[in-house]
Image: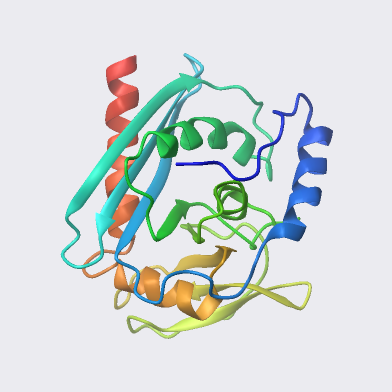
Length: 226
């Protein structure tokens, strides 16, 4: 997989913030993804702070039946300090290596993290979408920014996630009565479509199948490396 927009790795948080502020202007908020999304790649990482290792996983599934098309893992050393709002600079290098190792380009990327729902409107899902040129969605388990009303208790209920009066995502109930997820646009997809795709990927559990499988794969890869 080609990386369409590259940048140097920052050496300080200030440099990292500068990169975010430069690249966020490249984010596209409208649907430029395939009309029929057939393959989706889930991205996730697992850390071991004691050893300084990070494991990244990329798992591509077919949306019809969730058959695994391919999966890749990369284990490397953590190369950026823990800084809220700058997690992408820890996670992106091994995630991009895992994506490069894929034989097939997916129709959509699903990140375990946020996209526009970020203080500088450029979370991990935006970052990975811009540098790969692929449509991407952020799906967070917890709120990072903004406020919202509680969505209805039924599957598919949603409420807008607002930050400084701007809609930066949606709070989406993926199963009846479970805690909602925080869905935000990453790149080349609308919020409505992002919510439809996330709901489609959650037939039985709170989290998308892509995230569930990538999380398990990253944890297993990290365990093997320790």
